[in-house]
Amino acid sequence: MTHLTVHDLMDLVLDAGSVQSWDTPVDISGHAPSYRRELEAAAERAGTDESVLTGRATMQGRPVAFVVNEFRFLAGSIGRAAADRIVAAVRRATAEGLPILAATSSGGTRMQEGTPAFVRMIDISRAIMDHRAAGLPYLVYLRHPTTGGVFASWGSLGHIRIAEPGALIGFLGPKVYELLEGKPFPPGVQTAQNLAQHGIIDAVVFPEELPSVVDRALALLVDGPQPRSLERRAGHGGPRRGTWESIELTRAPGRAGVREVLRYGSDATIRLQGTGEGERDTAMIVALARLDGQPCVVIGQDRSTQTKDNPMGPAALREARRGMRLAEELHLPLVSFIDTPGAELSPEAEQGAIAGEIARCISQMSILTVPTVSVLLGQGCGGGALALLPADVVVAAENAWLSPLPPEGASAIVHGDVDHAAEMAEAQQVSAVALHGHGVVHHLVPEYADDDAESFARAMAAEVAVRIETLRSP
Image 1 (cartoon, rainbow, N blue to C red):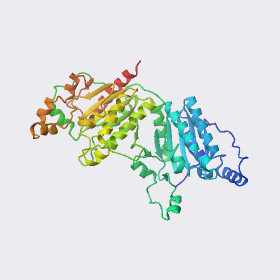
Image 2: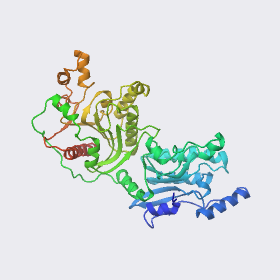
Image 3: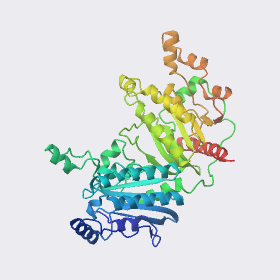
Image 4: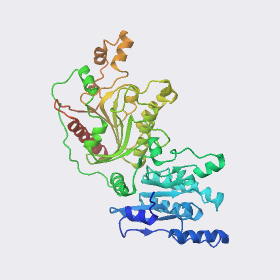
């Protein structure tokens, strides 16, 4: 693996001539002579005076702060001087209202300095969380290798966490494991790709792709709303369908879902994978997006991945709650898309706290202070659908529906068979049109007979953008 130096990485991502260092010279005079010699040799080898460089720069004209690791300086380890630099830079970035771009490459705490250096992980983490509490973005690029105390502090606290392909990333150094246990660490566990697969990081990104990814992230997090361009629909799409006909339409394979709304209605999207805590469920999409000019956090049930064999489980709702927290923390509107045949019904889901996750989603959405828009996009079945419904404004596709159980299930309970499903759907007033009459749905988006996935998705994005814009207006 070709390893870029810290200066190579800065040149790649930051605007030429914009870098202003925040670092002051490091005083090594108080260290033992042998350690001073190590530090002097490391500085000569790395071309830096410490394992971390900090400062201010611009990225595509936007002011940013940076904190970057140089592995060639004593394996990028963090001693007290390096920790001081990180804390000072994060505090200054917070005071100046700057997003932080961080890049790690480290073996962790500097063993030559022991516990006094080790405990500085707390100071670094506290400074970063204060930065996040101020509503300021913190983006992390995990490079090869990132282990130990760096991964267990500032490497894991980003709003967005991406990694270099093939990078070794983990808490435990594999060499340490082998020496302690007398056997090699299992291969493949601590790779960037495996961490992405398990929802611990959001994406694997080649260095040459990094500028475009950072630019897109900052456009969503910093630039603010852009002019709307999509056409909004008014009225209704023609003769109203019956409830059961609408239900069948939402179950049809070619119907547009949240993926299509993002594809056709957002001009900038960054997918976030997993909970960050070792869980990932493909039934839930979490993304930063700009729907018809409006930056927002999107959480959406992905109709294309939910099957009998792969239902929406508790981890999907935990991913949704990650999106809610991000929206609140970054002061971005939250848009939730409901489109599910129902949450997972299994012993595993019960033990995974599916009921508790539904409750926590409902309660967390209910107390958000940012603008919230809930979109009943298609199927809205059971508690898994209700989990994403609480919002300032509820928008629904004309043929969408919301019910306590699948209509077939309601029929089975009341009639002892599934033959009365259509009758039960009508009686329970599950249709978006009926819910609009009851005030549960605030706005209906017409569906046209000749709609394809693109036209329907663009119309939905246009309506959502109008609702966000209205909610953001004083």
